[in-house]
Image (cartoon, rainbow, N blue to C red; front, side):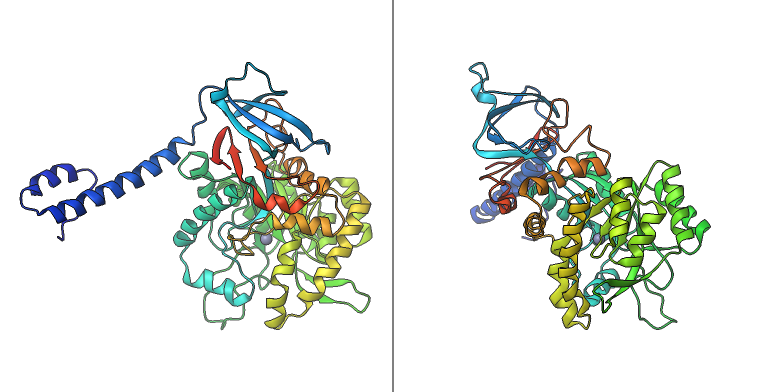
Length: 459
Ligand SMILES: [Zn+2]
């Protein structure tokens, strides 16, 4: 055949050639059109789905965990008007049946919040995995993959994420966020950190010949003034958060403390934090061990990421100053074997050190927000696996759920908009077929997702 059909001219073309073509060829053309129309219909349908329905929708929930109280409510009707929650109450005979979504066998919860993701990353167990992505994939291709990851996050039930840097893909996270907000692609609400910062010689790609120029997974920053400039630059290009890497090169001391090499000096960190705060932005600090965490806390960052080891004194300061702990437990276990096999056995020991720290943080009353480092592991894996680890390390299921809803919303300063099911908040609601207070792993089976009053997944 060799005739290419184009969306805008094909019907005419099809008629023009109809006389010359046999029945078989016509059938093929019709099939191709049916496929094109079906694809277009799906696309148009999903684009339309970005607009919430005009008349109220009612969710009939068997149980509701509202994100605030640890006590579930039974048989609840949530009325949704546009993108907001209008009211929450008991079922009434006046509720029009045609507008009810029946979730009477489900537990409804606020949309989940993952406060540590990397949508521009496709899993990097070893340094080689990471280098491959930065060396062989263009930022444009990585952005296409990121749009798929954003959709995956939403379908897993994460209606809000804080994406903590693009790992060498520039400001692509700000564009993915824009595309979601403009209804171009489905995805969670996003806060983004853009490029992140680290000092010379501390962040991959590393180990190449000095005369070979390679990309880096961060913006390289040396000196306090350089730090302030980078903060200004990143904020001007859309950063909601400033992300710093505060330590590297981990080892376990004989007394069991996880040691590290701090990256920034205290002066550099303080300048970055001061500049970010001056511009009303918060700072997230990757800090896995003794000095990195200590320096971050002294500099006044807003969240400590990973925190495999945190000294008791620093936990005390975190609790008193309201600095959040985002532990990302699952990813540590996920990469441990692979990194040990690649020559870094310290990662195997870090898991038990992490458990001890997590238990001490709970006791010290540190605010803990749910974060997974998704992207550090494959996006096909449900980030909700983190819940089981938090419970294994000492949280109740209710505490773990609050970490991923109301507490996470507080870290993001979005507590007036998301994180609880309450009147006037965004209708970001998910549901699971079971009782997550009895078995928290049921959160890995989210089968209903609504974001801003729009249904993306139904049981
Ligand atoms: Zn991370």
